[in-house]
Length: 176
Image (cartoon, rainbow, N blue to C red; front, side):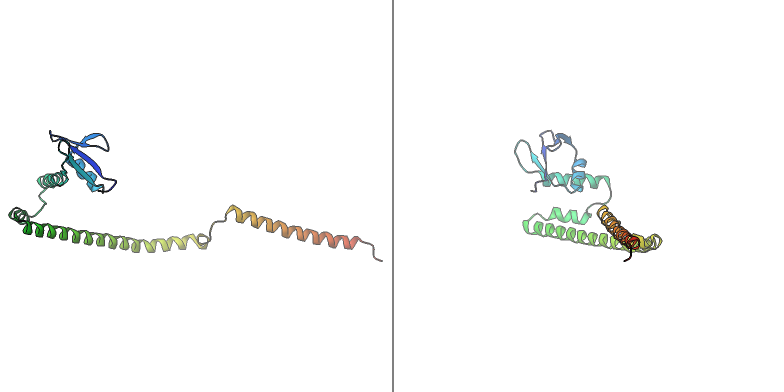
């Protein structure tokens, strides 16, 4: 399992203990952790057995109890009937394929929604740029560029002053 896996210890009294937060936890809280994208591993304290699959199944059963949506009855019946390994493997492969397809379609829809949102925002950005004018396109002057510009202007003024003083001195000099 990944390094960011939360270890949950299951005690004989069926209590679940989150080792990362040092608190007891419910099935609903485990479901929330999983929905946030964190991996969970449930371990029996006494035997060390991995109970993750059983616990996740319990979470699904609890969710199905609270809402009418859930796995279709026919699929549940087929899972029970699939007692031999070949049928069981096929049903598990089918469920995984169906879920992968669902994830792909969901990601595609989310991408399309993002693209539609950016297309809808494009006219607003264009209008904002029109109102702001061409100044927005120019980068803001940095202190270094302002200092460079000031030094250049001082140099130009000094050159003009020297030229003017030189011309003045030439006028005052006696002519021979």
